[in-house]
Image (cartoon, rainbow over all chains, first blue to last red; front, side):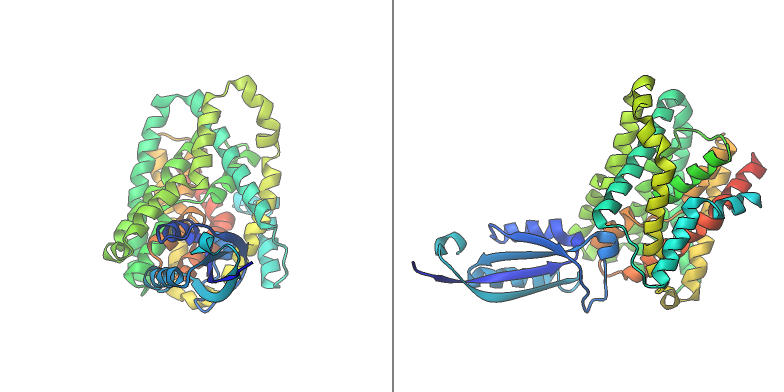
Length: 100
Length: 318
């Protein structure tokens, strides 16, 4: 079996932007994701989980180029205004065409 | 003022104070999030059902004038809040608009606590009053966002999304849905569900207020950062807007109980629908200002002093 390199993009965001973020991700070509919720605090000092509900953590596997496009979108519309962080880590998958 | 003493010593308010006390001790007595959500759904539906049943009995003609008055108040009270914030604080226009949206909208739990107080004192009120709650929830938020003007426009899609968030959010949908169900249900079928939604109601309110006490208590820590002007505004705005609500309610022919409820509605600040809408439409506004004022100062003030004050005023006028 041949492993194909992709990247795992992880986004942690305050709950209030969840619906908008998932729409924007779909528009950017992200076809699937896993969403979990959790608590936390960040540099924005907006601890919104008391009133908005728990933060969301979205993970998705995609090509490095697609991840760059999503990060550029986040940098323009989300990072300046909302409590959102995102990072990319390398991943290996078997069915490469499913994720790229 | 015996009403004030009776309010303070009611289990609901004492549970709220216990929650604040626990938060100040940093003890975690919060209910799990899903339980909090379920309780708030219950309260919304119960208040809606009760209002709907009242609506069915009153008929459209009796309700029309108070509803129109509520719409008018929904536009005027945020403007008063805006002016007061401008005079008393140095908030930026965006932060001022964000706080204004909260004072324009209304608080379900404050209303609910007022209903519980009226019932414990056998003070009659118009049973359809929850309709006024549904009417008053939205306009204030819209006026607040409009006052933000250019600042909100910068967030572009945010404003439309915020309006959708309010209109399709749990509070409006469950409240108006409950009103419709209550209005359509026959008296006999309503009596069937009354044990859950009417009899258990004051007990559930105690649980919910315990949880809100913890949330309010956590907000109290931010009060010093808000500054004295904002603290004064967070008490002056509910007194002015609440008294205006009582005056208008009395003028349109509501009973003292009903006029007091309208005062509670105009004098209370939203901390469920408005924060989510404002966070989306005005992300640059600082949540510490609007949450601290609405949940940390105005809500406890209304619960302990505001409600008896509006009731006393309504009785004096009525």
